Length: 366
Image 1 (cartoon, rainbow, N blue to C red):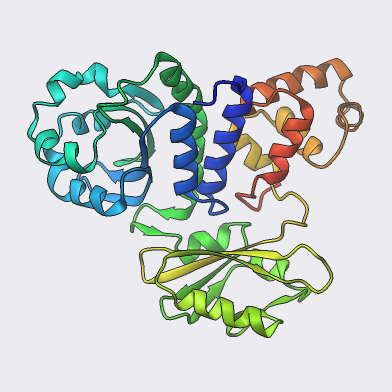
Image 2: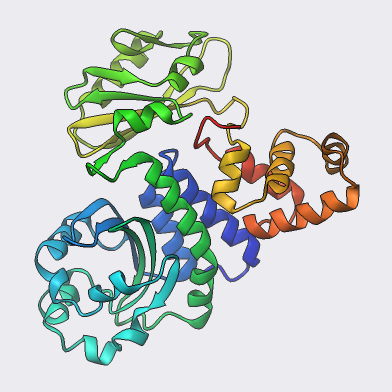
């Protein structure tokens, strides 16, 4: 753990990483690795589980465990792990220390530990958080420590509990990209509703569709256009790099596409969806912040007044200018700002503005 950080700084850093990952503007692997470092864990994971069947969807791992080992665990050993059964009983948004449920000295005697976990997923000590996304569908976050590392410190467990509400909101935001009825991640219908510029390709690099947000972003054809064949970089070298990335089987890539009227390039993120498709998101780092008031209410649990204040701050207004525009006393604005800072894990107004400027939009509502 970083011992010299104040609590709000580390909390804002982790929350932002998970919020960005939840809507495709960041990597769950990177967010999990950051979380593991901050909380002193050796490994971390996030997945969505179907409670009735035990099926895992949208699986991500960080730290010292690989996806292949987790898949093997899910297929063979999960049913033999006494700690695994605890997940379905956890209340929504509740954090748990698994050592308090099945103590380490008992867990090391189980078949799951002796024959598999000890060798391949050595999470002897674990803490976790469950989020109910829909009936029968649960998102699960977990952190683990090896036998040598020992049990999580009380401070780490406390930090994980503080991070819990943010993990809960990130998981619910992620649900915008999951069709729970069909288990299809990032389906066309959901993509069409997002105010996140997205294009879909098949695994061979053939363009399938794009949403309205992408069409709006690229209407000026500033180095990148949207045509019948999909994304069309205007520079030949960029066209070749994008085509190669679309045909690659690596599953994830990030490209920079040069602009004509700005020194700041577009950023293109490619991610395989598990449905023989590639999802492509386009970000304009030079553009205005895309987060809206509805997004702020959903992510941080803000009231309408608090969300308007946060949105105005993201747009560059001072606290006095916001109070004047909202028709409220300055003291009321100051009180709302304190509440917003507390909910977002920020200490100062400038820190809040920086965090909001980096948040991606989740919806088309203002």
